[in-house]
Amino acid sequence: MSAKKAKAGVPVLVVMGSDSDLKDMSACLKTLEEFGVGYEVYIASAHRTHDYLKKLVTKFDREGGKTVIAAAGAAAHLPGVVSALTTLPVIGVPMSSKLLGLDSLLSIVQMPSGMPVATVAVGGSKNAALLAVQILATSSDALRSKYDAFRDKQAQEVIAKSKRLQQKGFRHYFDEK
Ligand code: RP5
Image: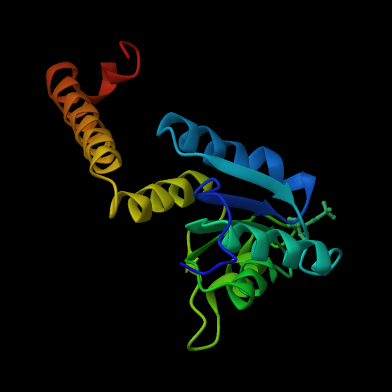
């Protein structure tokens, strides 16, 4: 272990470009909490506060963090810049924008070869958290069991809806939901 590796910190760093992203990112934070995954959350912009961003990411990496979730909108360079600052896996979340998030999506997903950012859907902050859980679950049997249980429950809920649809017919499905 490097002498610089200090005490173990939390496994997930969540960073977003603006406080205007916080509402869309709440599903991410809620999901991490539901899985009992520790996180730190910051507002830091690739453009407005690049020095602050660099300090946050390098500290997180040095302290043994495992994965970064980075959310940004419009000229959404934040996840790409984070990937330049660390070799930890980076998950990018495109935020909605005046251009419906297409600008954000393309800014994040179109990374140059050799610099991957795992990109979720526009506003897909819950999936970003789930992907982080999956990454962490590769080295935690307990987390893997929780994630497997989540997927089983989700499947059962869909099947229950399908069965209800068979029983009620589509005209009465919503009335009796
Ligand atoms: C991006 O610009 C942020 O991530 C946000 O989605 C967007 C708008 O930011 P504000 O002008 O609301 O601070 O950097």
